Amino acid sequence: MLDLHGYGWLLFDGLQLTIAVGLCAMVVAVLLGLLGSWGKLAQNRWANFAANTYTTVIRGVPELILLLLVYFGTPTLIQSIATSMGYDIRVDINPFIAGTITIGFIYGAFSTEVLRGAFQAIPKGQAEAARAIGMSSLKVFQRIILPQALRFALPGLGNVWMVLIKATSLISIIQLDELMRKTKIASNATHEPFTFYLLASFIYLGITLVSMMVQKRAEIWANKGVMR
Amino acid sequence: MDFSIVWQYLPMLLEGAWVTLWITVVSLLIGLAFAVPVSLARLSNNPFFSSPAYLFVLYFRGTPLLVQIFLIYYGSGQFRHELTDLGLWGFFRDPWFCGILALVLNTTAYSAEIFRGAISAVPRNDIEAGRACGMSGLLLFRRITMPKAFRIGLPAYGNEVIFLLQATSLVSTITILDLTGISRQLISKTFAVYEFYLTAAAMYLVMTYALVYLFRMWEKRLSGHLQERVVSEPR
Image 1 (cartoon, chains in turn blue, yellow):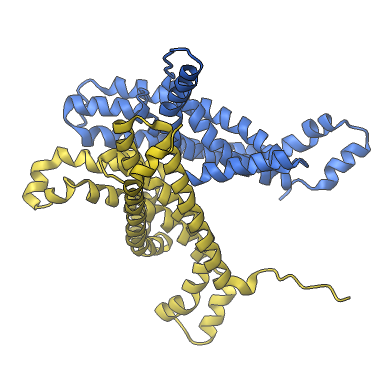
Image 2: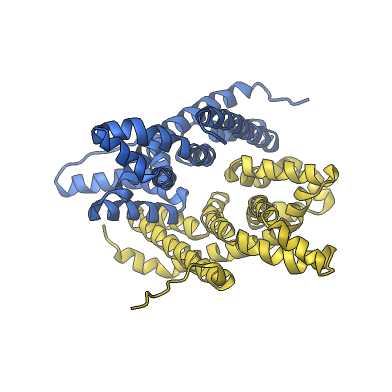
């Protein structure tokens, strides 16, 4: 039988942190996605340019490079700016915050595309009809656009979540004690790397399967009012 | 920021970029060769073929690539004696073998899923027409199903190629000096964090969009007849 030498709880701690980072990063990603899709669809050249640059650059560079850039690069940048201004400070970024922000920032680009597609899928006539019966543009967004956009975006955002939760394993490289790093600690201590990495992979698989089920439920719930 | 230091080490970075491209192409080609049979097994009506293929695809798409790399590279150490007896330890000790093996298995799973979707999206009429002309079995597959499925699946496969190119950066965690690995090594030597990571990011960006462009051209060539044409208005 599987003998974990008492390291099972360590993986459980790591799992909790993985899910915490994943959920926080997903919130960041959806907020950035809303902002980014607004930027892409706005009638403003600068907003378009900023949003297009954001998605183009992020999707063209590996997550690992971006993660290392933010985690190791930002303190160096702040320090060198401080030094040039005559201060001598030392900046350390909390790995949880660095990881959450970086992963959220990367997947914000992917959810930008998902949400842009969702907003575009809503017939223009609906917003015009709502304006015509006297709703303010905020009301139109709140009552007509957003509820439908979320329904259209649900499958895409579900996919973003599943890629995102797997990408959180990269944060172990910047020393955050999430599932992957705890696994490394346990496998170094017990000299049974295969057992522990296999177990970790099954935990990730479990997260994926649960997410798939939740996604299916959520889609059924969101499409309740739609005729087929 | 001082980019002159990057100039000094540019040949090493370019070498790293070459390694990245090389690993991508090798994993891609081997993965492609495996993905077609796996996708066919997945579509088979015989559960003896379809369920292993399903589990394979589920496992490699449902777990992070980093775990797969570590499982193969570090995990094989647990079976060192058994592998030595089999004469395979020489392979599993080598980070190149393990890295490429992990990438191959990963891209096989993702591409198999793409091909499965593409093959089942081939219109029934096309296949019926092929049958009506007297084709069956392998001939039908080679002449009708495959070319059509290839065109349907090409855009999604292009995305997978780009995904793989970026995923190769993870092999730097098992000591391979690809573009990411070289950058990390040079940074630990020179402490020029921003300069090297930004340069590496720019190089990845160029490689990614070169691939995007190539695939777009290929798509145009293969299915140009399906694309919308701009017809000029008569005056």
